[in-house]
Amino acid sequence: MCAERVTRILTAFMLVIIMGFLAKGMQMVALVLLAFMAIMMTIWALFDFCPSIWMMRKILPSCYCPCEEKESNG
Image 1: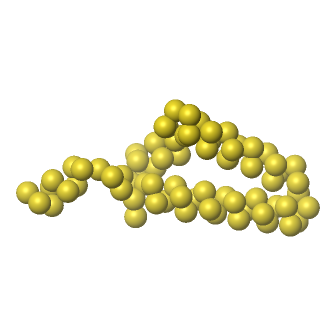
Image 2 (image 1 turned 180 degrees about the horizontal axis):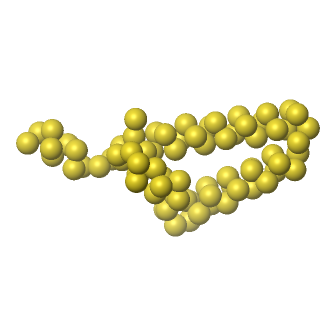
Image 3 (image 1 turned 30 degrees about the vertical axis):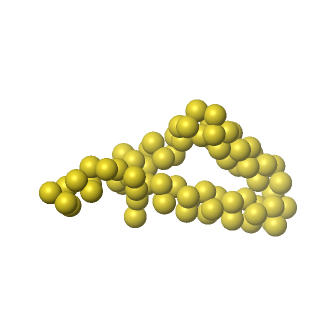
């Protein structure tokens, strides 16, 4: 797994959690989490910087790193 793929999976998982909170009647918690996600997506769109991908790249390799291709071809 790579950092970008894990981030997309975690984003989908967060949306499922938000839907669960809405189904349980916990609208305030769901709206706070949804607002957080909207702010993060807006930061990603405006500045081309996603804090969650930045943190994931500290743990996992990037899906788009050209360094790995050079090592495997070398």
